[in-house]
Length: 510
Image (cartoon, rainbow, N blue to C red; front, side, top):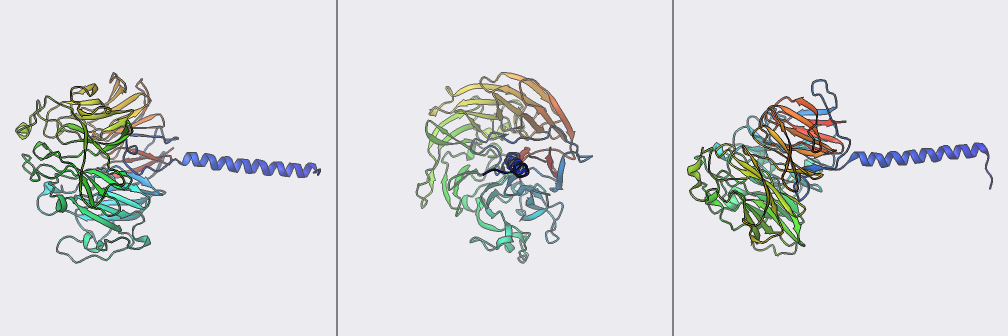
């Protein structure tokens, strides 16, 4: 069948439009990127992202590249996570978004990804009595972990909560129906539950169930594998900083994600060896066909445990089976450790950052406590393929820092980036620990560097945020003066960079 020139021209126009529309869909899908439902790369905890098209500069005063910003209280330490069009971050109640909640509270905010408006909030009253169990005005520090429509988070009251990502918008789901009582401080009647309140599915109280002694503020990023939630319990010392009142409580546990039931715990008897608290969250990796959980204990020793089998019985509480252990500071004291309190020269080592699993190796910062311990720390590279006590044989390389580090490593393209409390960002060779460059920050950094889109993003407690070019040569792309100190790690999701300061959360877009 023959067609006219006009028909041919019309059909050609249609084909061009269709092709262009398909191209737009394809490229829009690429630009949209993915969610960031957990702190760090899944399982490995590496502080990297595959996101593209992220900004190399921005200005919070002029609003250049600032999509939106919202207040998060006065003492924000939480790292944001994203899922299904929502952004979740820990906060405090300094902004009093609901007039019913007056005074100091721990808060978890669920915000709309599009404009930062409030979807719902979890409001948690403080633990009464000893401030060292739940430090005043500190927001919820633990980053949530999201899977599907479920949110898992450790609160300021040392409770693990499973929440509905949709809040009360789809009804009050789950076996837990006491949200009104939960929000109300001790001695008050239950509050009416509104559409702006969180929907609690189940709760597990670490103090009640395990007898732990929380210190200052709990901090744990829950690792999710199949039906299990792995986390550190944040068991710590009492207000005198000389011992823990929970000597027999575990530091690493696993819960059933559907019920909150305890399914496993460690049997390492960490209690007498806890110098401050257990704030390092676990990671995971597969070594020689075996899935393992890596945990930096509060005693300065890195442990590897067998991951739980998904078919394991749930009726009894299991004990984690140890694969290997590595003493990150074998010369440090292991007994009578609290006599080294305030000693800046010698004493025990601990870890704040998470162990990162990368190509059958573990990368971990370890050293003196930033408040009470020695001014010395290391970035360790450890062989994860061994078994038993590998203290003498497991170290591949070690990099010494003059001050403690709270950082989790970021590993990308053969380089590892790490911050310390001596105002430095270091760039090292991932294979041998050779230093390439050191960048000076305004103050010490309690957060981790984050690598995405061939850029390194990092902030410090001096209100400064830096964007550097990824690579062996130091090149600063931008430096931004923020509104307040930065304690959390930046994250990227769907082409947007999220930066949390003590006071605000910023969504930055190219």
